[in-house]
Image (cartoon, rainbow, N blue to C red; front, side, top):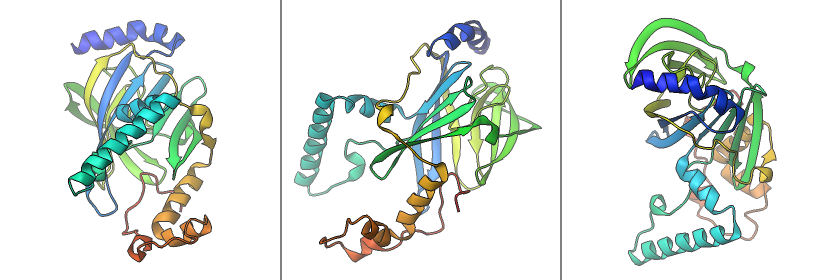
Length: 274
């Protein structure tokens, strides 16, 4: 099966490169920590060919597809309202059970442009930024291990404030991987830091899906990556000051506990904004 997958990818890579169709789809479990230290787990997929890839949450893309039309947005709001009423009727509101996006990030990697484009949300504002491939450099080691039946080689990088160890397999000739990672001679199946953040491949298959773009991409406003992170940190460290500056507390009474700083030493996946 491994040989069939690898050879098929090589045969169709040229055709896929001419279009925006994938030749491989990889599912990843992502692990990180909430600020209170509780483990956070999400599912992402990578669609990739030799020149283009998209790393995204299938559930979030499904919702973005739905709300990209007025009719779909109205239907989604009705679904949310119905779920909220049901929870109120049961006497308990659990936001985890409310239909909504858990993740907002899309990562597009374009070999033609040698550029990574990240689409995200800053509060309720859709934002995006770009960065060159050149910001990511690798040091390959001699260690090996088996992941999903593929022989993998270790590589390491210091990237945007964190040290990462990754495992890639030359058996799958796709120079891509989870999140922003790419540029090794094979598919990256695992990437971890030393403090609980990681991406772990749990499924690989051939694909002819349309990689496509991000729904309503024209509505995203261009920002600087570090400015986005600084703005998020400001909300965590000084929620009252941030909301006051935006005029969102004028004439509003809010539980003082909700306005206390929430920082407890945790940080984002990228820490070089400070």
